[in-house]
Length: 296
Image 1 (tube, rainbow, N blue to C red):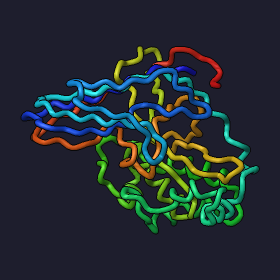
Image 2 (cartoon, rainbow, N blue to C red; image 1 turned 90 degrees about the vertical axis):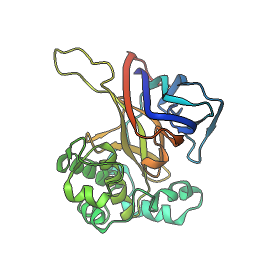
Image 3 (cartoon, rainbow, N blue to C red; image 1 turned 90 degrees about the horizontal axis):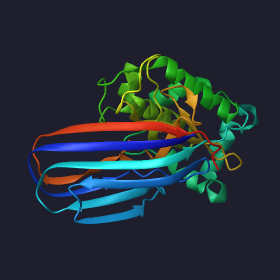
């Protein structure tokens, strides 16, 4: 499947911004199963200085520095991406989850890159409640992917998707207690649960295709940023991505921008401004299929 994605973020400030610096995660990653055909990030007003680079996790990042006064700021990321992630291995063919934990703890060539995703991060701290929630899906000796699939399905069934029920600051323990939130919350819950077991788990940021109601046209701007979870299965099978919000394995309806320890590592737009006062924020995302091909 080939998608065209457009992600627009617009700030309107209550007073003039004199200086601003923005960090953007808006350019999709090139991956096995994901080919970036084109990608561009534009800003209004144009930045006085701009830098493109890769961050610690290998994500594409754009730094924008504005030193001219401005009352509004809009940044648009556009890309055409071919997506077709391979199916995961048979769940029964994966290692016992305790063996994956052991490999991650041992480090070395097999596990050192995965090991950094076993530790607490700023938005996902160790929670006994998360361990207790995950434990029934991971009895002794169970193949790791069997446990992951069950945990993904349980979160999908136990938690209610409700916008406005949480904020960026809502901790995992509160989401677990309330059993409601959005994709970011469910991803953080699952990551916290897996790390509590000792399994490497990372936060994946990107987009998901949304479907209009039957018989109705697709609405422009109705798509959205999305988040899900990557978990390491060991050196033979590598990483698998699972979407607890929808209870699915990531295949061809998801488009990856980047990953990190939690949301803070891959926020689409972040930064600091001097001035501005109160502001309004408008976000619009379009993810439109343009062709179906086999991903290379």
